[in-house]
Length: 419
View 1: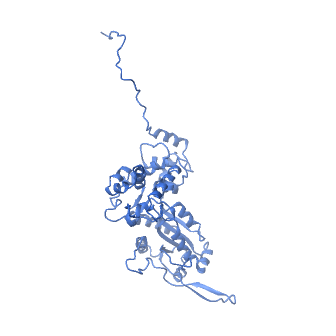
View 2: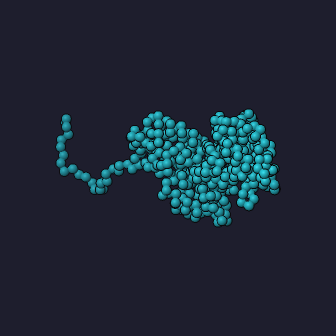
């Protein structure tokens, strides 16, 4: 969605009109940069990444849905129950062993009236359908006994979004607290268990935190999450963050949980890592996506999501990145070529800057390499710079010479030729 098309929507226009006149342009830009992930695209792309991981092997994999873990004294409860008995090898020592055939529930049990089920329900449905198609390769939600019996080699945790990384790390910690799991992990090179995390989207900071976990998990994404810090250049980041702080409802986190500033909305809801002015109501403030429910009737993001709107959003992201003069004609190739004029230049960084799927970015980067426009480090080659200079649109047209308004009378006349 371009800024103009966003403003034309009544709900968005009403939301922008709440800002002071000097701030409305920036507010409209932020609203236009939010990437909407339709429900069918979410299921399709997340399934594709999971099937890619299954093909890599080894199988079967122990597949888990990331859900919130309860804590005791600041530590998440262990993922599986444990039993202890006297050690047969060392006297006075106890052997602790995880047991159970079923792991934690795919979807948290309802414990009170009107308790809401979040993204866990959507992801659980994806995993259930995937399990039906790959029963030999997937152990869905297995307990410790099943992992031993089937000799699972990979512990794969699936989530929709890695924002700050807290929830994923808590889940990994719940498994890591088990001595049995740590023992399996220590033998991962030949017969043990390694860890993986698969998410639809993730922020740069959140993904790095997850990778730094003691279990050294491999992280696979469909897309990097666009954030205020990744989309805008450094000079504009401060201005946009200050806008979020000034209009944040009282008592809320201006840039969302973990100060992430995510510019993303799933069909099943907007993450709480997005700026709170988008989703939190207040006494004198009406949210654009109340209670983070982006799929409700009347939501500005419920209009049919067409390729044209997605292309317009990507173009708006490229313009917001402020990488120099715009390349024309505009195509995905020229947009990414323009984005490569600003570092970092790796595929995940470009994905987070433009809000494009990582696989799509990689495909276009390979195309640009084949044309000789960029090198292996994704830097523009001499040919690429020459192409870019030819495509740059000169926004400042040469003005016509300005003269005064006095009438001109010739002082001398000559006879016309051929008369």
